[in-house]
Amino acid sequence: MDLYGVTPSAGRLYGTMYFENAMTLDEMKEALKMSKPSMSTAVRTLQEINVVHKTWQKGSRKDVFVAEKNFFKSLIHFFCIKWMREVRLNLEAIEMSEKDLQTVIQHTKVDKAIRAEAERHFELIHESKKYYYWLETLVDSFETGDIFRYLPIPDDDKK
Image (cartoon, rainbow, N blue to C red; front, side, top):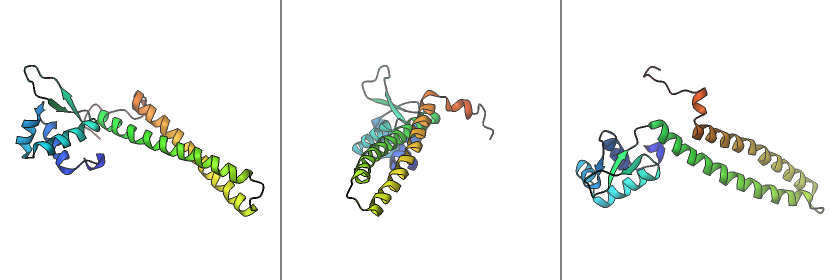
């Protein structure tokens, strides 16, 4: 669970919930001997990364939660969010930097050495856009399931 950036206690909670069908906050609190506020925080964190879901249970008025057992689904969701955040932030920064560098490059009174350095930087960051466009395509292949045509999920436990 460290990969997902959650605390060890939230990781233990997920592990406990993974082996249970469904649990209320009170059941979680009892199983892990944690305070209700800590338990609520951990559950909220796990919900945010889509590894725990609130569900409805007939005859219960309390919130009931279940752990996501499909690791492929939760991993894909988590990484796609992180990757798309990286794409969005970096492409925005690149666009702003390109504009600033273009201003320097096109300014007639800029020293030749500074202009040459600005042109070099412009080319470097412009070239980096290929990676972010590729990453967008990778995310899309995960979200559509196309990735599994090239890297299928094994249907047995053999390597």
